[in-house]
Length: 364
Image (cartoon, rainbow, N blue to C red):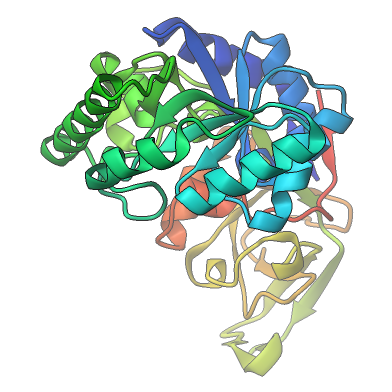
């Protein structure tokens, strides 16, 4: 069970919004709100004062519209041409990274007799999406006056900001601003300029421009360790389970698939019903830990699709039904999503966004 603290989330929204030197604040809730639940988190973000929402896919944007959310919703990833119809229908703000997409959206908007709001993506160094700054003149001539396109914004995404590589980030920011200036000289105007995700929102007010768009920080985790001294945020998610079964095993007993672990003495193994199918990665079998009776216990043997076995030999009186905390606090100890990410040599996104739909979300 994933327990989602909406009060903590809304406090984080307010904290980051108060830091913003921009007129607009986008709450990025992509990838099912980093595993927290896009619909519930979307409503909470709007209630907390977010001006806009950012998602990854047309499906997420459509879900928010079906939930009655009316604030502007940005798609932050490029879409396929066959998704243009639904994006226009549900008034989603679409990123444009090519002449072909601009033309496709224009034709679809004409067909539906609607205007479609678009934001032009500039590639300043990430080399994922966006037009090359050197193509600005050609793009402006070809696309700016296409019918039914509302060129509301222009944006970029930095490649090295989280790492604190400010030399590269400043170069990319300068490239972005010069491209915007060039567009303006050619009569192509974009009222909303934005470049700042969580790290920029926290550290670089000089790059906030017209809108900031924090994501993972909203859920209580600044992207990098250095930022913990700059902002006070509260983790939003606690992941709990319960002991399903307990077995007392003799020495030299193989445990789990492939005999990945063999007991060295008389040991007690507890079975916890969480596994790969829930988004609990196999890599945690090497270094991961869970909390039970306020003490840490390590996975034993291979993590399976539906269960993980933990060694509780050192913990007294473990029985079926006992609470197990995978992420969160129990007693005087806490396991954070960041600590869990470190065990798999990953980041917080890897841990939170991997939680699958079959994990029940409880909102409080």
